[in-house]
Length: 193
Image 1 (cartoon, helix red, strand yellow):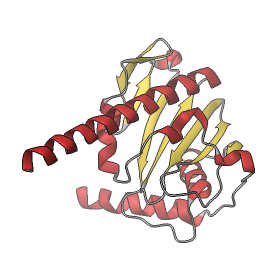
Image 2 (image 1 turned 90 degrees about the vertical axis):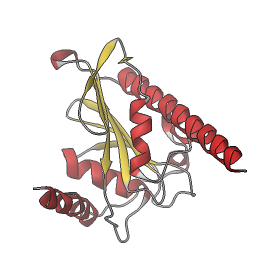
Image 3 (image 1 turned 30 degrees about the vertical axis):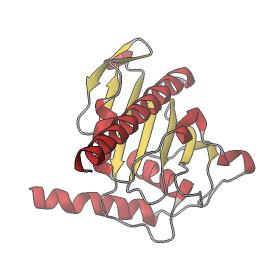
């Protein structure tokens, strides 16, 4: 069973890559929304564990529920206001796809067509998030990745306000996890010196 699962992630990722896409880039699209560009996001998907562990217990007045690996659900049933999740692309590479097109293709493969309000260009500077901002099925969506990463973080929320609150929560969690990792690295370096 485990062996089969190891094949599924790369196949899904390659299907997402095969969808292709073009960038709906514009000068204002280069500025990532909700301060997601203020965090040094890790390239390694395993480092996302610390970020998801640092997410708050509630967003928009709704308690956090366990949604499984790299998933946080805020609110239950009809009261669900937001879901924050990461799509681990594994070791799959998407030839010819990067930036906003990769993020869009990954999300559309996972949950269907998006109405795009804003999308970053396909080529973004190192460390700069490639993102998409839009909606689908009555949900407000934002998703991003960084160059060299094999993951996409996504938020789907019931309103623009809930999307913004969830984005603020994961940006804060990302900043906290990054600061903890830096402090740990500094302490380890000092101890070995």
